[in-house]
Image (cartoon, rainbow, N blue to C red; front, side):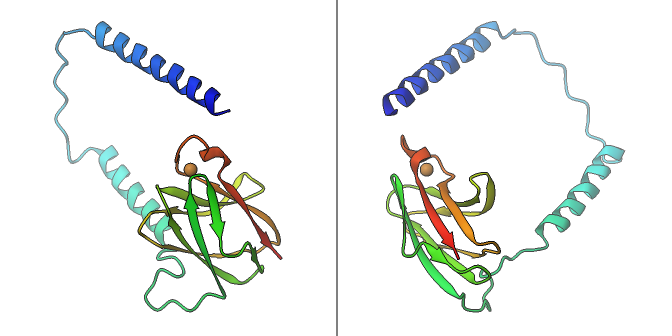
Length: 169
Ligand SMILES: [Cu+2]
């Protein structure tokens, strides 16, 4: 598997080099026409500003997230999570549904992405696992079952195999 990944990476890198070379060689030298001057009163400008404000307020309103505020209450359970190439170490892999769990996430080597999935496709939540830092992530699992932990940050050859299971009772 690793030799296949290496071969595939080398082939794709060679393809990128060839495409880049082709673009450089086929680029023309004629001058680019000057850009039109920016108009403050353009309706599209104001539509984008209003849309940006509405989208920001609508999507950022749940923040700051639970556990990130100075007056946060104690979680029901704390789980220490350490990522390293290429596995997850969890101080416990069993939690109760409806209880607030705080994951304290760090890494022993490089950056990893601590991501919790339901049914391997639905991303529940995620945070970075960073060497020298502990990132706190609070989750309440509503449904009992098995949840998959996967790595969301490419961290080397066996990144895809970096997984664990959380059992919610
Ligand atoms: Cu990874």
